[in-house]
Length: 184
Image 1 (tube, rainbow, N blue to C red):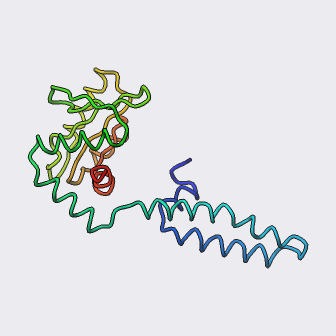
Image 2: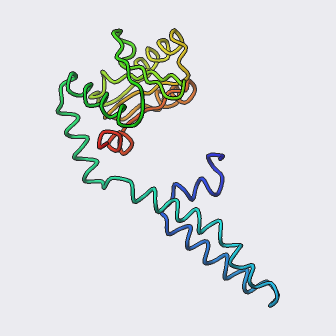
Image 3: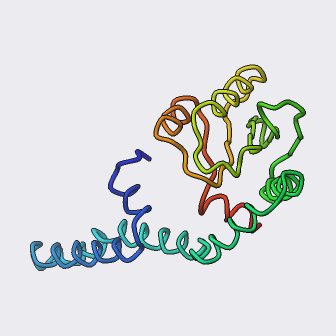
């Protein structure tokens, strides 16, 4: 699905927005269609109802902002060894096969269904992530033939880091996504 398509935007929006659009679509179809075709009003709203239900389900699965903050603070207080163990357990609980890597450029190698992902997380406490650690991860990805990379961060990535990650197949795992992974 295209990132800026109507349904992709609705999936990222609050669930009730889709239901509101469904109601408006059904009402508009009911008003504009001839009497014999007014039953089509329900079908015109059906895609929005389905998207609203999916968005509602996803939003119910999200941890609360207080829980996210609590989890991120707990991770920030951990030393690297404990954080690495916790991260490894979380990846395993997510169904990944995890291998620890000895080098400084990447910390873990994740494998699922033949797909290889390298993970870097040693600088997870940095308040601001720049491009340099992402370049190191990208070099490790190129050397190992990994299709994707994952950079774990508690702090904010710079705009240049976000652009570099996007261009090189690296996902920056932070905030809600990181807290959800660690809660598993």
